[in-house]
Image (cartoon, rainbow, N blue to C red):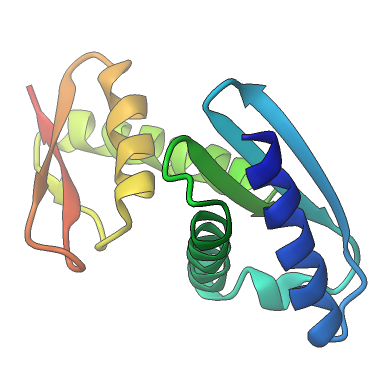
Length: 151
């Protein structure tokens, strides 16, 4: 996993340089199976894109390069830019709690907009902690969505 972190950092260093971006790259190992690569600096929003779509693509490219170069397909490689993922998780959790309260008050189900599996998990996990409501997922990828229902 240490080697995978090195390859990820090298790839992202080259990618950001080619894009003319000045990014600092830090690699951490939160556990034995995970490598987290954090990019920081100014004007890195282009690496995030709308709703994090570009960040997902950068992460997938990084994983592909790492796995091809190291031959390792074990573990997880997570890429983040400027703490975007943490901020998005917090914002989604707040939004989910607000929707849960609306559903409890109205007694009516609410279908959220389609979102990624990672975002759906945040919503499901948040609403699991709130009494009086529960969630289900409906639809097929990429249009799969969370539905919040009263108990």
